[in-house]
Each structure stands twice: as C-alpha cells, then as structure tokens.
Length: 179
Ligand SMILES: [Zn+2]
Image 1: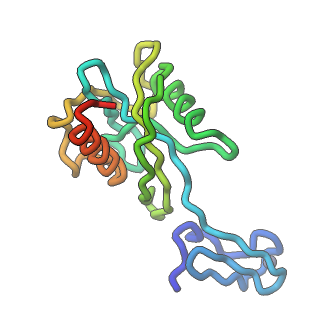
Image 2 (image 1 turned 60 degrees about the vertical axis):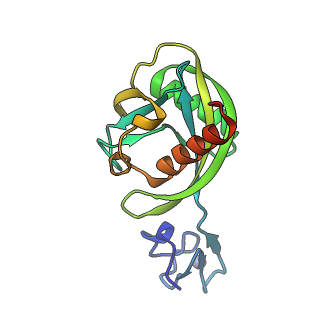
C-alpha cells in the first residue's frame, strides 16, 4: 500500500529515531519502539461571502500553492479551534473584516501543495458585518462575481473551491434564495 503524502518527508521514527519506520497507507509504525502515527487530513474553514446583490467574493492568491489563481476566503483551522472561530479569524487576518456566518454548506476533500497532502474543507455562506475589505499580503486582488460570471474552473487554485461554489449554486437554484 502506498504511503500517504502526509509522510513524504518521514525517514525516521519521530520518537526513537529508528530508520526502520514502516509506512503503509495512512499509518506509520515503528518496529523498534512501537510508535504508531496516522495521517489525517488538515481541516480548513472557508466562506462563500455574499453581498446584497448575491455576488460572491473571490480572492486571487499572492503565494504558492496556487499563486495568481482564484480562491475563496478562509484558511486552516488551528488545533482545538471551533470551525466558525477559525472562519472569523481568517477573515480578520485576510481582509480586516468581521463576518456574519450564514448556513453550513458542506465539507469537501481535496489536496494541497506540492506533496499533495489531504485537506478537509468546511464551507459556510457569510456576509461582511463590519469593516471595509483591505488585503493582507497573502492576497493579490479581490472581486465580487455574479454566480453566472465567475472565472473559469482552470483559474481556481483548488478544486474544492469550485465544488463548494457549485454546491452553493445548486442550493440557490433549488431553494430560490442565496442563503
Ligand atoms: Zn520508534
């Protein structure tokens, strides 16, 4: 079984330093000290931020992975952090705004970066409650896009972003509103 990309840089047991570490699928086992470790996807929290006209806020990434490509706003959840706390924190860091979260939209798996580590990406709809967006240095540009006028799939950094936008679009079509 091929080892998870999470273990790409693993050569030695992290506990005893043995070079006989066995990697199989999502599990690492050390035959010398018995240490077991598991590859788990990294959680992210992101928002489909909407304005009064039902347009969605997209950001162009300044850094790799995906530099120059479009993304939704959000980022990695810290250990022990609530999902919505992570979402609010990321929006404060990236745009300097406070958000009002709407509905939970779904969770979509994906991979990230050159090693292709697995991510598990949580999405909510949200509105800007206060503050004017000002970009931090992780972002190159932001823009409000109508649902039927967003950039093509190949201009997005990550496929889970497109999946989330499609899930939201489907919800709007079936419910007749943008929440
Ligand atoms: Zn060991």
